[in-house]
Length: 480
Ligand code: ADP
Ligand code: MG
Ligand code: ZN
Image (spheres, rainbow, N blue to C red):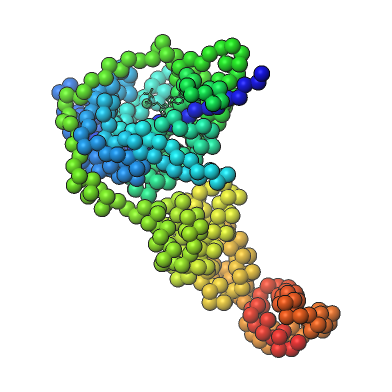
């Protein structure tokens, strides 16, 4: 009998917080490759006797994340030492929250392409410090301690996901939610978001999870999805061939699109956790939580409401425009400069999104500035160009980054609104299309508009799209 399998996925996400200073000292938390090892002091270099002091802003940012992710805040939590010996840990331990973390029991909700809604639990979030960055070259290794003690939060999900698509959407949603809070760049490219994936398989319907494998070294959301699919396939095949999955840590090999063993359970480290004696308990008061709530930037939901009421756009449109904060900001810049929210929403939702999709890029990489698009919209709004010409102009402005008004003049794209010139064209079309004219006269009221549209189309064609369609309409009706 062929068995059916089900996979189980849990994700661990590390986020760097953009607090400006490190978690236990006042050193800059700007991770720059230029000034290697300049953002350091005895505390973040782990000199003996140096004492850590918790950065208040870290707690503030961490609370923002916890609230945005629907977590319960623990009034009292603490810090622990995770001991291991490796050059990237200057103290030979990492300060983290092991025994009790400041936030737990949250969730993230999202919708899949199929429309199915998914809710993934968040087990807990912990505040911790980043390690130094180790760079391994051929015969030597380098360490950049600028990264040591940059504040991190680790967001640990419940093993609630079942497919790579769910994991991918979980990460996208998490990224967008956090972006709205402004606490992190949340960029895998820049290393401010890092993700490890835990994957296991079990027979479909089983109540007991299989043994999990943890995959590290994932450098994009797509890599996470591919590594999950690879692992699911590998584990099923292994079990079907009579083997069993070992609890181990594996590395994603991007070049070969496979996972490889990094360390097995036998080699797993004993971190000998114990409470950090140099830090006080972390106490969070109701007042602090209230202050953070007041201080939270506008959430996506609030933005959706605002877009609906101030710009008169519908819910579906507002949801698309706000999914990514950058797109919502681009849209608002277009509205500000064009003064017409309706046309702006239309153009961003259709033309801009179409280009982004075709080119597979984000709005940050979009070539046309909000200012340029706003100018195109103003040209439509003031009837200087027809909407048909506007589409052409839009295509041109994707590559020609000059002022759209200059381009319109240069290419003489201005809409024809001179009625005597349009009249000549209307006459020409009416003479050449007697049949259509007859057809219009004989048509009933229901069909008339459609026939008229055909005649207007002929005139538009003759004018190479430049005639003002309203005027054309008017003149035809007058003459027919
Ligand atoms: P560790 O310290 O070993 O990384 P964590 O508690 O930090 O452990 O993270 C464990 C992660 O593994 C969580 O995201 C959890 O949801 C996930 N997980 C636990 N059991 C399984 C399983 N059987 N299959 C897949 N994922 C699992
Ligand atoms: Mg972990
Ligand atoms: Zn320091």
